[in-house]
Length: 80
Figure 1 (cartoon, rainbow, N blue to C red):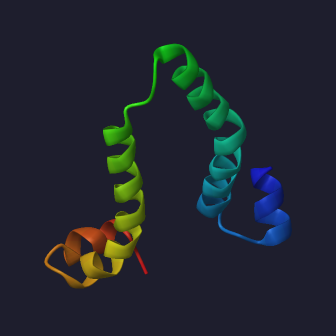
Figure 2: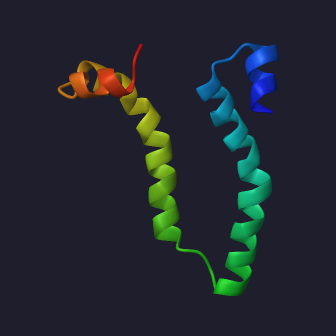
């Protein structure tokens, strides 16, 4: 799947790998969560809320990292 995305769609390899991982998340991860919730007596909602909040807030902070005090470190990690 990754070589086809790189060759046919002409996207960089890292983006193709990320796309592949995202596409595998729902069919593999969600049934696992469902089974855990049914057999484990529930889900850790506080932890899940923190992960969800960080997943939403993190990408919005990237432009500030590039311009803020951490700009030299982020310039190496986030080129462009």
